[in-house]
Length: 220
Image 1: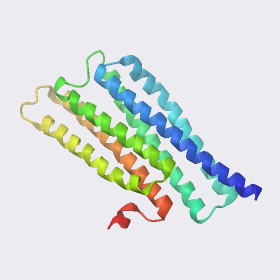
Image 2: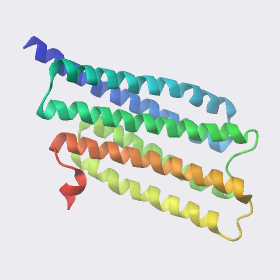
Image 3: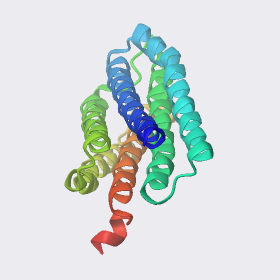
Image 4: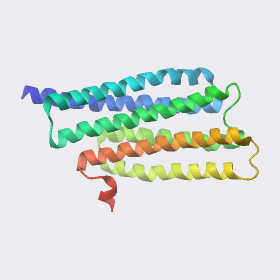
């Protein structure tokens, strides 16, 4: 039926927009890490200003999903798709905010490098893990691959290890950089950890979208 065909085209369009939004977020975080580690103010400023585009995309997805709910009164799987899409767009928007926070810290400490030499490798690894997990989450949105969705939980363990390593360094009695830098590093660690957590949340939502069950309960 033409009306149902149009409805499902609109649903597919929301899915496509989520993938596009995911790529914007992934690029923002990768560039934020580069700006952070190289004290590149120009790139940091670009990321800060470009966060508005991510916010606008989230608002657009939200408006389209709510409009479809109001006009079509979907049930069962279609309703689950729309509700899940709303939540995933919120996760992606928050990930964009976290890239924005990394860039703002870079700007705040410019022209000095925000990250002490001893922590450059750890922060680079955290950035790499975040980028990898985010890309996998985007792939899961696109493919709805349940095995890949569950794998993201294990990938996130690597971020937890890096986060603990960061705190071990910060809490060492020989830490020479003072309280302000320790606070900066604590915040940065939190930004990367939370970004990965949101990517895992997206994978869980896709699992729920496909199966109608939450991944944790399905694995118990």
